[in-house]
Length: 306
Image (cartoon, rainbow, N blue to C red; front, side, top):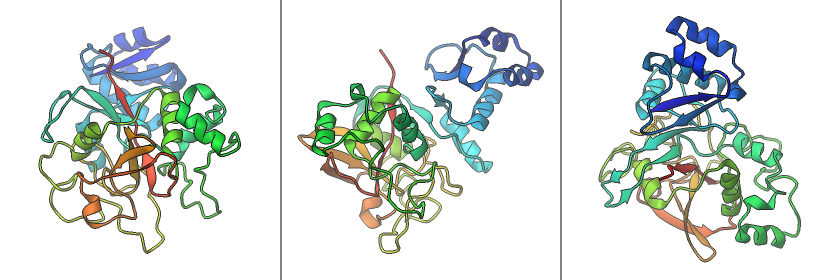
């Protein structure tokens, strides 16, 4: 269920007829709007207008301090039309008991891994200087580096632009940096069970997000450890979403998770370097929280308040 909240236009949108919708939206500044997912609330706008507003937000792309929440089926239909969801879009995973034997509350999860453009926006807002977003472990990591970073360490050196394009997933980011970004954005890491439920896309007892068929280049960006390749843009055309509308839950980049043990943090998924068993949804690994590697990224989650 979607609800559009505007500081000065919600009444107009409630009463607008379908022909008038475009004119109403054309007169609004995108910064005045927020698209927020409410699982039980009745929308403020008629259902026939709702899809048009979603498409409008897709054309605008990411809007600061907002959540763009799209139904899974809408994302799949967009893909089939040759369109891609906007950067920052999320889908809702319903509460329930899933095939991996765990119960979860409803949560939102990113359609894509977090991108360079998203974390750069936080860096430009002073993320690396504002201690309120950093945990004690993160602050200790920064102090041990011997400096307050003016720019993020994940900016990969070189002029070839292989890792720094706006829509590529951010990589070489430590768990601490990812945590600080998520605090800034009002989001969090996925728990491992949340990550796996979302990554499976509704499938049960299957090896991969698409089933048991062997990987191919339409399902996963993988196996380039020997060829010097790099992650593709999260919205690169041609890669299929899973059944929940998530992209690259196998391949492209590894993804930090919430669970930890001492200085070690768990991560899930696989990267552009991986192949074989590492591409399976159930594959689990862990690393020190200060690891910086060109295959390591993360995905964002938001829970619903009870």
